[in-house]
Amino acid sequence: TVEIDQSRFENLAFDVHDDGVWVVTLNRPTKRNALDLATIDELVDFFATAPRAGVKAVVLAGSGDHFCAGLDLIEHHDADRSPADFMHVCLRWHEAFNKMEYGGVPVIAALQGAVVGGGLELASSAHIRVMDQSTYFGLPEGQRGLFTGGGATIRVADLVGKARMIDMMLTGRVYQGQEAVDLGLAQYIVEGSSMDKAMDLARRAAQNLPLTNFAICSAISHMQNMSSFDAAYSEAVVAGVVNTQPAARERLAAFADKTAARVRPNS
Ligand code: 1HE
Image 1 (cartoon, rainbow, N blue to C red):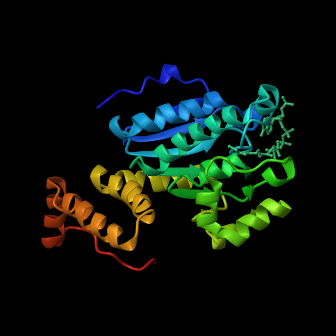
Image 2: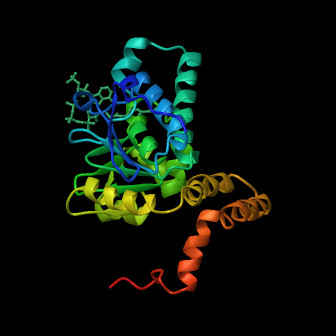
């Protein structure tokens, strides 16, 4: 395993729990957690290392009233980037978000307030999204004279469908409340704090075997990119490794001797 040297980070704050759950907080509340290049670099750094550092689950949060305002528009404006410069910025975003989605460590986003533009691209790279009553989703790029560059054409289209994504970008349509859950933008909406719910979910996920979570939080995404034929083959190979792991034997024995919990309907 490798160590995560927390002193390297300025824009992310960490709260590490004994059960291997890491709360990772975007920490630029005065900028509504807008994603400047330094923050993206820190996300790459953290998510590249987390799978080998014994991190069992991540709760990704934003400090202040808003989860994330997307691309740092002021930095972008001041930098006056060339097309090639901005292409490389976007490639760096993809590196960060792909490491999240494909890294094999469950990432649960605890959302509040604005989850917009690149903020929605970031949230859509998490495996589970929890919203509270203040949370809202939008893709304001269209109104800003911009286009998405952090994977929305892939992940947001995947969550809500192409037609809804195009409407969001053309008209600035915002989704919030139960409707956002019904469309698939989040899996949970809570009355109270999205952080509390996200922590519950992360703690629950952290009890699974790490190799099982690796398969859930990496293989499923990879398989979506394959033909059904190759995905079925890959599923068999992954199941061959995961379902015969020595650590699973204990859990199977507990089922066999009837000490393991049974699956029951919600009460
Ligand atoms: C920012 C940013 C930002 C706020 N970049 N600085 N994203 C957007 O188009 C969203 C732009 N932001 C907003 O619509 C609003 O700021 C919020 C709804 C997120 C929050 O509203 P509010 O009233 O709480 O804050 P505010 O007064 O608008 O902003 C407070 C400060 O945060 C202010 O800085 P200050 O130094 O004047 O105090 C803002 O400038 C700053 N701030 N949002 C930089 N985004 C890879 S391509 C991805 C494409 C995109 O993501 S496009 C961006 C879409």
